[in-house]
Image 1 (cartoon, rainbow, N blue to C red):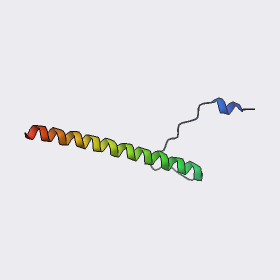
Image 2: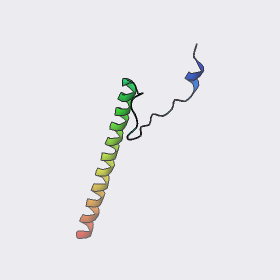
Image 3: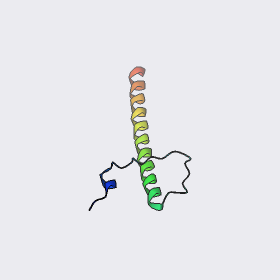
Image 4: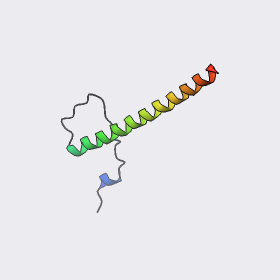
Amino acid sequence: MASEDDDRPRKKITHEIGQDLYLLSGADLDERIALLTSEIERLKADKAKKGASKDAANSFFKS
């Protein structure tokens, strides 16, 4: 029999820089690491995309 908690939407995992980590379990820390790693990859991809766009614009206007 499922408990009432199973029907509730799960709270989205968030991380605040500098947050106290004392109460987090090892599994919680692994989830945070995965979350932050994926966010870093997303930021790097966006930076590369913006860099390529800037390079294309610079190349266009130098011609």
